[in-house]
Length: 153
Image 1 (cartoon, rainbow, N blue to C red):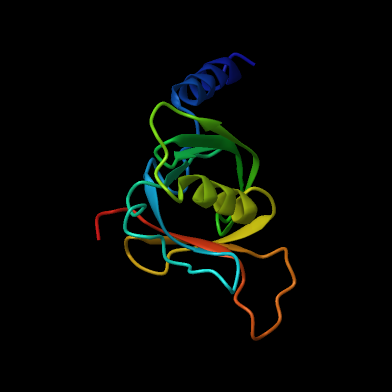
Image 2: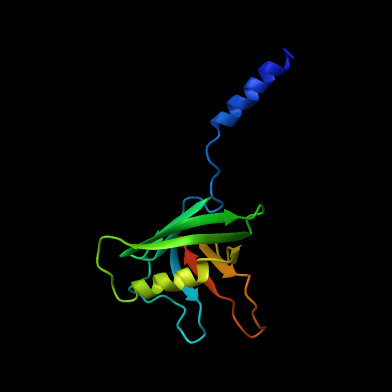
């Protein structure tokens, strides 16, 4: 028993030193580039919104904004980090004037990301794609998704 006490104290000390688990995506501010949600709509964000609409996905929560709106909610990751789910998304006004398209873009993001299972892929070195996997899609259809860049590429 005496031998176990120092070992147990050491293990507990090491456990106390570890911080919260880091997100699989780090603290990257992912800029929205493309929203695929409706075959009758353009997917690429207009130049006026490029770099303005972003998302930061943590281990347990996410935040983001469009310039005049902020959004946040809960995040869940699969053990292998190839799937995620964003839920309880709230959108609130923030100081500043909205430019045309910001409110619509926030609603489109909520529509695609706000609930449901997402496949997490990295199609390019500085890119991220979140694709809905819980909706039936015919072979000729494109699943709903959001594509991002980290701005470094």
